[in-house]
Image (tube, rainbow, N blue to C red; front, side):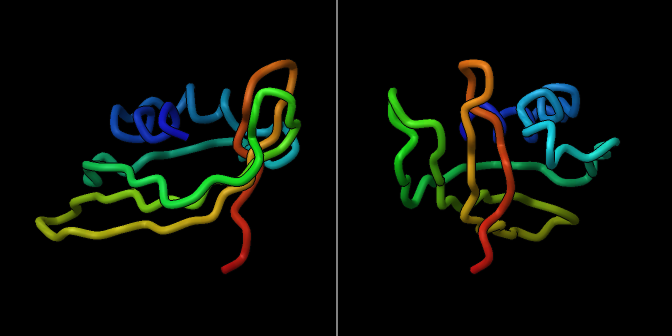
Length: 93
């Protein structure tokens, strides 16, 4: 999760696509250069340990856009694929 937030902050779309599950990965990913990601809060994690094949992360990602502060809140699912964690999708709130 933290590496994906860093990739958003740096505008690294290639890393974001690489760290996305192949079954849910978009064909293209365009990041908004006007969004400045400023802080990540991990609120809760579920599973995702050394011997798990799936896990969840509830987070708040803070950003600034057009001079205004905002927060993106999500409860994400991750899966282990070929020994690495990849983003699967967002759980409904």
